[in-house]
Image 1 (cartoon, rainbow, N blue to C red):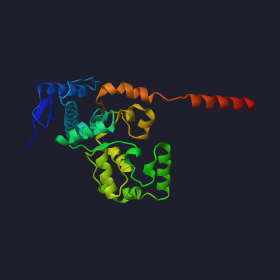
Image 2 (image 1 turned 60 degrees about the horizontal axis):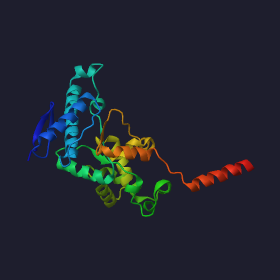
Image 3 (image 1 turned 30 degrees about the horizontal axis):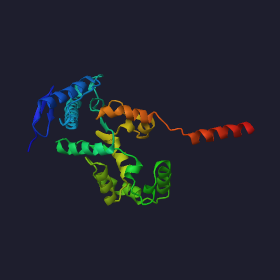
Image 4 (image 1 turned 180 degrees about the horizontal axis):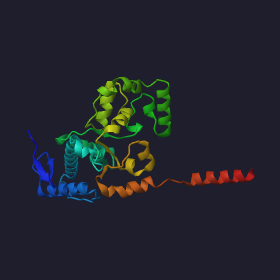
Amino acid sequence: CAMPTYDVHGVSVEFPYDAYECQLDYMAAVVRALDNGDNALLESPTGTGKTLCLLCATLGWRRHHEKHVAAKRADWEAQAEPGAPTLEQSCPRIWYSSRTHSQLKQVVHELKRTSYRPASVVVGSREHFCVHASVSRHNGAKQNALCKRARDENRCPFYTGLRTRGKKVNTNCCDIEEIVATCKDAGVCPFYKVREESKDAELLMLPYDYLINPQTRESLQIPIKNSVLIFDEGHNIEKSCETVASFEFTATDLAKAILEIEDAFDM
């Protein structure tokens, strides 16, 4: 059956059930910020469906603008105007971030309750996605190196499967566990499947660190210009920023550094 639809500042927003007044106010604030291109710091009491409101308001706003752009593109006169917006300019992709992948699993669960089905993907590292029998036992730089070797030597059946069967696998609106299970059953590499899907995804879900850390953000090879950035559970951002900007320097590290300096002097 059709879901309740609300007019939120001129934008039709579909909601899974009858919305409370506080939820309508929250979605109105989201739509206003998106319309004006503003930053917004929003809060609502626990149990008021903040994640659902964020998803419905943002996806409803994007759908509204998508229709607007499609109409303008159909109008050749408007299309010829030098100031006419392109599809990419008017329909930005949405980056939905939360603190952990566990919290993102809940976001995917909420997304499935809505009527919206954007091209979506959950972004993660090799440690989350690798299903290769031996490479998956490692992590970090060693795992990256072993993965590259397996691909170069054609010893990863899942990477080979990606090239032959990857397009047949549907990972839309799936959480990490579902993506891994679906790809593994199809003999397709989940990590590179997600990377391919990310290029054209309308909704990308990922942990804070992937956006906050410049190196990680650049490794995604997906520009965030002209995008909607959402930081759910924003009170955790400060801790994430501290982690990204910090490093450990132990007494052992210091002792080794002193030894190297002494060796350098002896030389």
